[in-house]
Image (cartoon, rainbow, N blue to C red; front, side, top):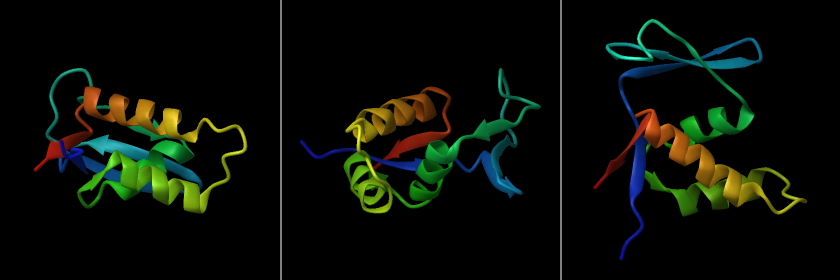
Length: 95
């Protein structure tokens, strides 16, 4: 079975303000309405990667090329962050 691809939702606008990164929900109703989501470095990296459809494995490979993983936990952290993004409808599975 082929690994699913994910892409960012257009209902969120990404902004970098100084050293901070935030997502601003636009047109979103519910618990995220009228809020800003502050992203740490990992989540900001993921948002940028999912601007175009890609698999989690592709993103993990790119992260390993860019960041050091001396503890060997990067893959689990990325997979957990992707689950959070999907849970809050920040990214969606695409065909």
